[in-house]
Length: 352
Image (cartoon, rainbow, N blue to C red):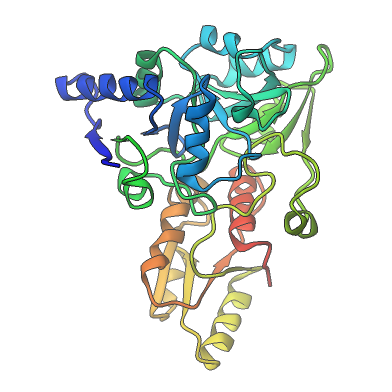
């Protein structure tokens, strides 16, 4: 397949308008289009067309029981794909949409099983990014879109990464430059009965538990998937992406270290045994380390910076001759909860 690549970094230009029109045409024809959001790049297909959604699973190599998120441009579009909007969801819409948050609600009859993995709920999101919203509006339909990468790999945060993973597999790539947040949206289950004023975070993201707690009475965290559940296939059906399978993994096995001293001690041990080891380091520690293969995560005081570059840093080592990777843990507070969620998945839970 010939993948068309469009530069959409300059909204308002004639070239931008032509690209959006062509992308919308491809979506309506049942083809796949990768596009930027404020979180990561999405791989979009017609969310009301089961055949188009199955193409998404095929292009990514994604298990078909892993639900997709439907992206809409406005509240009218959202209300067409859910059967009921709970009171807690209304509060979230008012506070955070459009933005980096996805809500789980009861699905409407028009949503195919290929989107939901056969569940009676659907994940819906309204991205806060002009290319994404213009494309959805031009297509005139909800767009099903997981991250635009090969399943299990770190998600793409720029058009070049999408092209490396999916060129030749999909119809088009809308290259809008780097994304803002660099990690996927927060996913919250809003299917509690009206009046409960309770949500459960299924996947942490840029909208933190603290932020949700300011408007919702009770914010719960979904129990993390255990290693045993992951290995056995997680008997219960996942309500949202990222709950069942290994995600975000670089090519070399990643291990997390509790602190700088532990990381450097493990680095020296592995090097003494002949391993080539890649190090991800906080910016404050980077100058003091003489490792041949190393990369800065960003300042430990700037979690937004770490999140924005996390997947690019993991992918950086894919082209280097390293046998393994070591990375320090990030404080589990605020945005750090989401970062550690991604690092935990990327490492398969390996920590020293």
